[in-house]
Image (tube, rainbow, N blue to C red; front, side, top):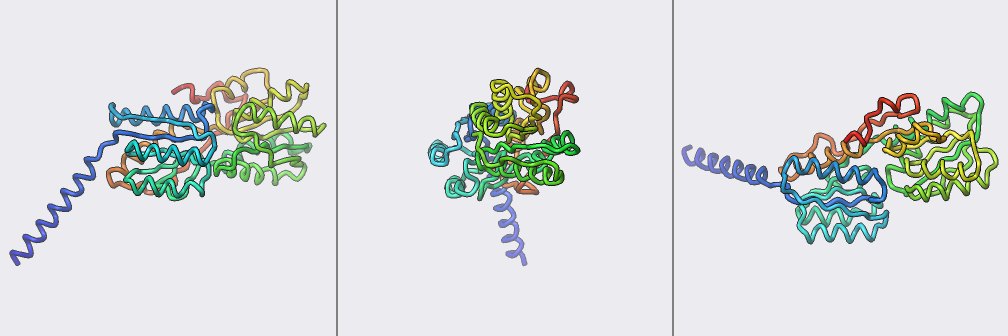
Length: 312
């Protein structure tokens, strides 16, 4: 009996020591790879991650790089993070499925991987906006505005990551509730950028003589679309989007045809992702592997009270 107690005590001591060693793992280095650092959304995300990481450990090293929606480039970036010995990778996947081998390789090296904004196969956790809801909010605005009288709508698509796919699906679901609205196009890629949005809009507005509304998958594309409409002298177009970026705040307050944006919070996403990553390093898993933050619709009517990214 005595020997049994001794064995049990030793087992408990070893377990406690093991737990203590896990808890002692410090967050020293983070690697962040995102779609494009030319997009203020991802710049804000990187800054949010760095702010939270430094609150956890003032000496933490944070490296943010732009994958430019190039899967091969992102594979190389993750390899570089592994070689650098980072503790945590925040991953905005260029391809949510094809990125899995890189995720597994990082995890095998003892690195926690948290997906942000879009899902990534195999990641330890994902923090994102409810993008289906965001698409629904932005396109419900169009339905409310035009549904009774009808009209022609364009869905301006983007890079085929999960966030974009979900937004477009949410938009389509909402537009389907208004049979009076006709979708003229839904498959053109605005590249997630102002230039891409402008180029796609120029093509659409040249091709279609009557366009009543355009939904773009993010704010940079919305700004580009408004510029294209100005250049072509096209008026009376309701433009909506997703992000709630600083530029869209200006657009909603100014002389543009942008009328609404379903706001995300990249700062909060990144901060939550870092918190989850730090917990993972200490053996604490989140209660849910996918954390979805609720969007809110920002319009000309309520933008004055909107505490957006700029408030950070």
